[in-house]
Structures are given as structure tokens and as C-alpha cells.
Amino acid sequence: MSNLSIYATQFDSNSKSLTEFEDSLSFFRDNQAIRKDTDVAARLQKILDVLHPITEDLQGRFSSNIHISETTISDILYEWHNQEWPTYKQKLMQLVKKLQEEQIQLLTEDFVLLNDVADALDSECQGLFKRMRGGK
Image (cartoon, rainbow, N blue to C red; front, top):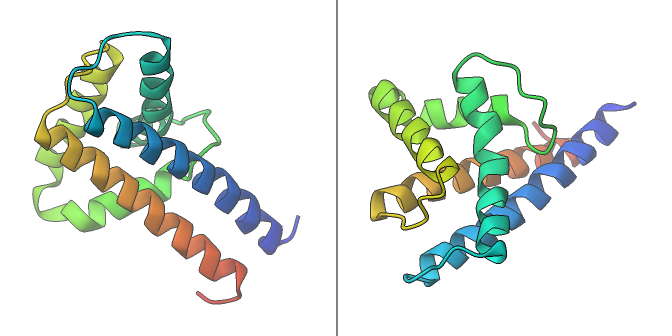
């Protein structure tokens, strides 16, 4: 498989995950009084599908998820938050635990973290797109 096809496959997976993640994030942001139902559970799972491989990588574990480039996204988050990395990492892990326990009433600081992850995923998509065009 050529580099172009590898980048294209990664770009496709990452951009689909980004779209689903952002749609679910908007749903939770726009609906203050959310009740648990199957739609909420599905949207929560879309968010966790992105967060799980990132937190697995942060814990030094190999993720079997192939939907996103979790190592690169973790590196981007580290680059953006290296001054407060231990605290940032802990907050991200706590948010994942909260979401796994289906605590769906999210706080402003939760949305800040989730937006940050979306921005890192978007940044990775942009990088892959540049590579597909032959840039670095």
C-alpha cells in the first residue's frame, strides 16, 4: 500500500470519527435537560469511541481501535498542554470515567476538554490532508 493510500485511509477514518464526535458533542451542548435513552447512549458511545483509544494511549496501552490516529492525537494534546500535562491528562481520564458511568450532565470544563479533543482530531485530519497533497 502506498503512502498516499495509507494517508487517505487514515484521513477517511479520522474525518468520519471527527464528524460523529462533533455531532454528538453539539447534541450534548445544545440539550441541557437530557434524559437517558437509546439516542443519548448512541451519541455517548460516539464520543467514547474517540476518547477510549486516546486514554488507552495515555496509559501506555495499545488500542485495538482503528478509527482514529490516537497516538498522533495524544501527541498533539501533549504539545498544546505540556506545561500542565499531568493535570490535563488526569482531567481527561476523569471525564472518560464520568462518561463511561453515563453521567451525561456535562460541565463547562467537560466541554472545554471535549472541544480540545475535537480540535486535535481536526488538526490531525488537516495534517493527513496535507500529506495526501504531497506537503509535509
